[in-house]
Amino acid sequence: MILLQLNILILWSFVQILAVGRVHQEFLKDLSSLLSAQVLLAFGLFLKVAQDYVTFFEAYHLNVLLFPFFSFSLSLVVDNLSLVFLVLTGFLFYLLNLTARSLGYRLKEIFLILWLLEFLLLNSFSCADLLLFYILFEALLLPMYLMIGIWGSQKNKIFAANQFFLYTLLGSFFLLVGILLILLLAGSANIFFLRCFLWDPTLENVLFFLFFVSFAVKVPMFPFHLWLPKAHVEAPTVGSVLLAGVLLKLGSFGFLRYSLFLFPQAALSYSWILLSLTSLAVAYSSFSTLRQLDLKRLVAYSSIAHMNYLMGGLFSHNLSAMVGSLLLQTAHGFSSSALFLCIGFLYERYGTRNLFYYGGLATVMPLFLIFFFWFSLANLGFPGTMNFLAELTIFLGLYETYPLAALCMLTGIFLSALYSFVTLNRLFFGPYSHFQRKYADLSRREFLILLPLALWLLILGLQATSVMAIWVAPLEAFFLAQ
Image (tube, rainbow, N blue to C red; front, side):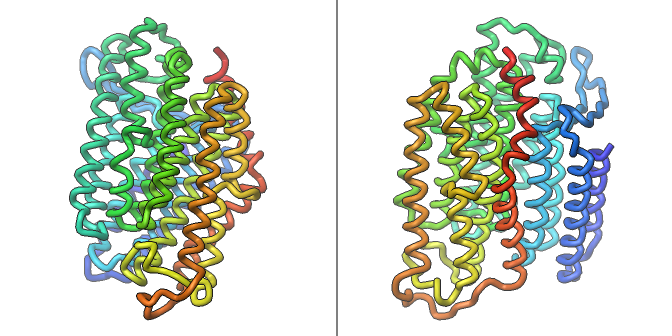
């Protein structure tokens, strides 16, 4: 029961951080980093156990009668679809524990929030019961709300935290209504039981719409995306990395695990509408990225474009595009997180993210230039990175089934190269900015945070087919065998 052991290890780490006094700041930093390294090692052992890549290699269930008319099931499963997301979560949280050391106040609270979020996300990606997923889905809101509202870096952090909370809460209301309908009609919220349930076509369409609105807010898809740029701008670096690296993936994972799995006919019927929305979102957010002056807002709009591009792959009902979509979710978790970390390191030095503040950093921050340049290449889908193979696979698969949508989404690929090189040119080349009075390249801590991300993007980019092979069997068995 490795998943159960991981949960116990994370909760025990939470208790140890809770027991440390506020005055022991350095000990608190070292303890949290050590505990996160232990959890990361446990994730490595977890992956070692899963090396056979069977469809479902571990499951445990605990059924508790909550109300007389339905049973609440604590049902957690790990399969090939959730495995990579679990490892991505563990890896990023290890880096976040190192990043949070630079926050100057309330260190104990931020570490507690990080451990709580890791526990909730670990179980959200493993959940096979809709009601349990909803509880975990909602529980994630409060820690993120506190993170943005307390540790936010600019004056509008309270507004951004409220907007994030209310947007996601409203979207979750539709999910709750859908789950309650399912419980009243089917008597169970277990997705493997519901997979065999025959829905009336009209009811299936209604349920798909309710689930769609909730997950579309989380991704976010157009027109539910307005909360994300503000949340990224106001959030601390650890909050931005969490949003881009893991939390947005919970929306796309929800589409795959629940919407497409439970309501395949409705998803197929409305695929042209969904692809129209994703195509519009890719073009709109890519053009919006070109006019951004705030570095975080720029990467935030870029994330919206990439997330909607991979959503187009999920809605294509093509095996190649769906596998590419899962790969892009993983690649985007690495590349966007790395860019937000780089921007956070700049902000710690100069106190601003305004693009026009900077210039000529190439000669005084060469190490930072190498990392930022590599992560920008990954973000735009340069050959040799995971993003390239993922975007290419999505395009080829989507072109087989919906060629017009595939061609429309090419705008995002072209514009990503444009805004990436404009940003690089403005930051690192040209004359020195007269606003910059001191220079400091990456510290040892910052270098050790960015190096694993750079190496994984390269290694997994060269070995991406091995990762993609994990998803082929479950996608064929559960999503394309209609």
